[in-house]
Length: 430
Ligand code: EPU
Image 1 (cartoon, rainbow, N blue to C red):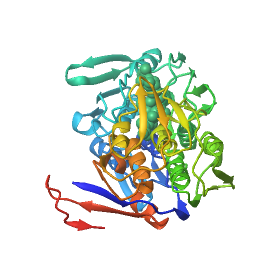
Image 2 (cartoon, rainbow, N blue to C red; image 1 turned 30 degrees about the vertical axis):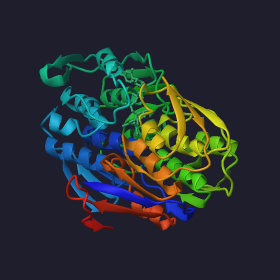
Image 3 (cartoon, rainbow, N blue to C red; image 1 turned 60 degrees about the vertical axis):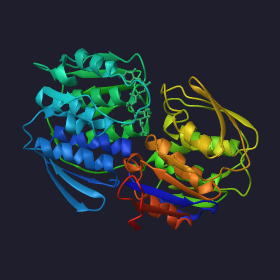
């Protein structure tokens, strides 16, 4: 078992480089199935969700070459299998993108229901609605396998009842080679949707309107290999921005698209934190305790739900009382129980939390309940007085490239410990 150990109280200063976006790369890796030829993809983050996607693709029969630590070459020409079993799909939520991509190429996919962070009910009814609209038959088989097949996929209009990142991506993947025009209405607008559209277009697809709520996809006969670089991770960048503010630090966050960070920057400014945007970097600094503010999570361009736990840590030590409303997920406040152990004063009522800012947090043994909850624990540990130990950090490793080294380079006293059993005897530190 691995733990993160943090001696809190150090101000973060310096520069940090943001890696490629998790939620873009986990859509783009399965999208390579649609191409005939080699796709060379750069700016791949070193995270365990990428390892899982590569494992699945490899098992399906793809050839994957690691060119350097952030570049992959993927050739899916010889894929024959259209089945993703439980042992693979349970590794992450994005395994369901293999439904859209296998369906798009082979008119058939059998994929076990996906895993992923536990954030409340995570239905896939909108994905199914989309697949059925373009001519597929969807059957839920025994063992929670989703079987999707079509004689021929035919473009049509698909209206989503809720704004869903996953359903938008899955229907884009399934329809790029369908006959005719597919129009997705009430589509998600997140930066990773635009990145996927750009990737598909680099392979010869005809996708327009990504980034708005109507995406038009004119089916093409064939897609080819391409070279592509993944966009920077909006949420990783936001996490370092909040960490800089929470530690009263001064950090230049490099390799970002400031436009993607506007909702986060705006809230930091509202809290009295200084934010300065450059072309591809953003500086965040303060030497004061933040002011309180209200937050409501929304689909893009609203405040991202994936920043809600991290921002709540900042508000936990802010001057005054704040309210946080979670409008995307039913159950994204599990981390609050961990923050209580550190002295935070937060009350949760349904999908809202009420935060009474305290002067400081104190260190405690805590765990990462999920990916962003884990990032919140790291920020809490960075500001708390004393030594914080975080368990279940495999959640954090799913989505944060080199988090220990990056925070250490900013002056944090943070390390990874490997412990052999429940007694938690420290074997190695580094
Ligand atoms: N929903 C439905 N039916 C569906 C699909 C979704 O009702 O068929 C509902 C969900 O229950 C939820 C809302 O729609 O209430 C939004 O879900 P969405 O489909 O947009 O989420 P997702 O695709 O499963 C992605 C990210 C999440 C992020 C959400 C929202 C990936 C791999 N995951 O999930 O990221 O929170 O969009 O932005 O892209 C994370 O990175 O920590 C993470 C959880």
